[in-house]
Image (cartoon, rainbow, N blue to C red; front, side, top):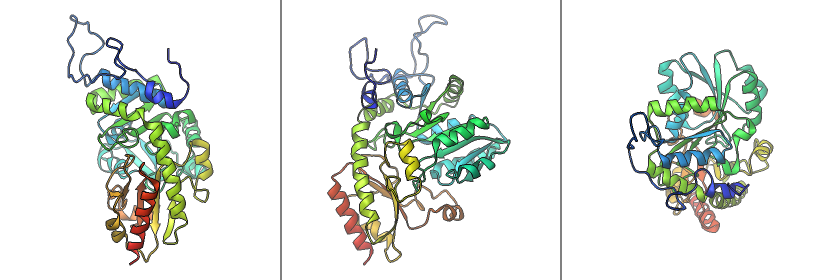
Length: 385
């Protein structure tokens, strides 16, 4: 019986811990595609690794426990996880999505699922009363990110979940930016939680993975069928790496957030910075809601420099912080959403929702805070020349 209550212990001991036959404290890597059967119609509980693999099963049990869900599912990427969830719906259904979500989520809806008759509408999910007016008979789910990518917009997860239940539709929350260490949407009423586990859960920029957690056996059965039928599963070695990454989630996130809070304050007080988007700052949209539903503001910051700054010179002047896609690794990364993570969203839509060409997104790593601040400071000064 597990003798712990807190998530700092659960990230290490949760799910399926160790290996009883050998006493190993780590779940072994079951690098196999198939399993020998005992006899016709009899097996050890394992048949084929697309359907189930012990290493992947340990990871799935772990994320289900951390998110307080009924079951977890591991996929080959965050987009594979989102694709599996969207496969719950049929032609003619409509999904409401937040006005600023990851560009890949928009792209798969707009360019792939749209071909099969699955519709979507982009709405301001922060305005609960107006949002409810948009729920027509064909709407079957609300898919949100909170904080949203890349403007760190905060949506009230509990309020969204209540509206969804009232109308008999699903509430889906992408919890990538917060992780279960900082925020647990199922406890706030959500039906489905999605992670790009490539990010903070893996934490070391060395794997690509996606996770889904559901709050009911009915949804678990449906996602399990889709996972097996479509086959976008996570392999055993990456499952092992992800379990290993999750073991240090709490200590990493504490350092990520500590650094982010200091950098957000620095940027907020910098005269060369026009706007700072960080839900841990009291003067930003959604601060009170985020404080109610999350442990803190997380470790993602977006900001805009003043008009006299050359954004290209800013990026080229950085010496420590890397210009790269992705986020959530131990190293700090900076990106330009308009041409990188959200380039698939049409220009007009980007402008309408606030993803300007001057927007910079910073994933704050766990380096020394003085080194990070000095790097930003010198790059900002270079951008003004």
